[in-house]
Image (tube, rainbow, N blue to C red; front, side):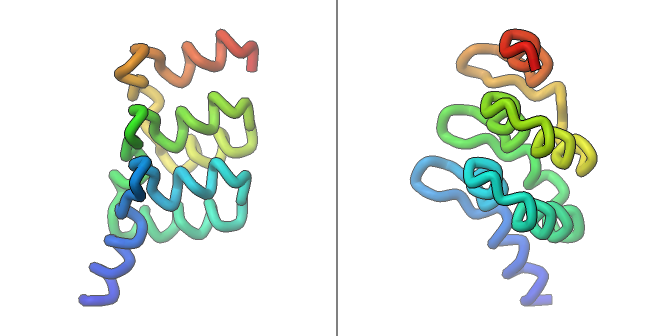
Length: 102
């Protein structure tokens, strides 16, 4: 059981900017790491995919701001919540994508 807790802590821990490993994988365009982390988080902490960082962005919102459709698709396939908004600007992933024309 300790291993499950360690994995849960790994996928939910946030750095000084509030980024989880999922945020960092998206920011690094690291598809392989993102896939591994999504699989792990689905098993031990399904809500980890929707954790917001210090600027109120989830990994999905970061991917949409980056305009990376492949990352967005992976996150949506892993059940990232598309209704969560950037609370600083009240923008949803759809709103951001429409503004970027992605």
